[in-house]
Amino acid sequence: VVIAMLPACAFGVWNFGVRALIMLISTTVSAVLTEYIYEKLMHKPITIGDLSAVVTGMLVGMNMPATAPWWMGALGSVFGILVVKQLFGGLGQNFMNPALGARCFLMISFAGQMTSFAYDKAVGLKYLSGKQLDAISGATPLAMIKDGSMNLDWAQVLKMFLGTTGGTIGETSALCLLIGAAYLLIRKVISWRIPVCYLATFAVFYLIFGGHGFNLMYLAAEFCGGGLMLGAFFMATDYVTSPITPKGQIVFGILLGVLTGIFRIFGASAEGVSYAIIISNLMVPLIEKVTIPVPFGKEGIKDGK
Picture (cartoon, rainbow, N blue to C red):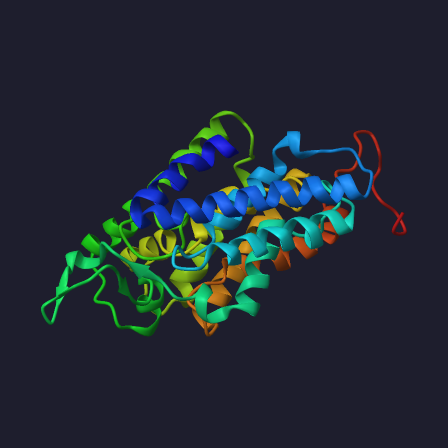
């Protein structure tokens, strides 16, 4: 998983500069140190060697705006590892994805800074009123599509696919995320069921309720914008917080697609992936309970037993 995330991280550093690298380092180091210190103090086996804390730290960094201060990302990693993961028993016991728990914690605590984006390559604008600009602050393409302030065309969709737009460090380049996803699928690290059902359900929901009819350009923009690709392949597929049954993974993916569609289309925010995954994480025990396969040769469940 770490290898699969490297293309998106590398592009994020190229896209946003050294501040993105500092953020990724701070979140990753904080996650590893938090896990080590907690397990040392609690006299538990040290588990940083399994690299799960590294994955969490990288995901937290990828979900951060490059303009946010480094300590904010570090605080998110501490919350994700300590509160969401370790206080519930450590790896395998957490009820939600630690990185998403950290993102939602930061969104609630520092809403302004978590939704403030600056992009130094935006539209090639270098000068304004005779002054050179270091960066341009503004809404993400996804937010502009939602409020109708962007005249969307295929050239803009291509920029969103390549990643030369504003957003969080690791979510802008759908191309890099798909490269990493292909690696995970080829190595059979993740199953296709969750991401495919997630994206397919969202596509159907958006085409029906999105308000743009059967417009594939807007659907492509929704796919490439925000955290949909990052969430579908790297966070919704987390082993601990997703169903293990094949039918359960399909149900889980459908639920994710419907919730994301509801949040993006009918919600106040243009995004909704994080909350959709967390809510679906809470439903995993119920999903697994109703999708447990009946053993071969058995007649089936009777009287609820």
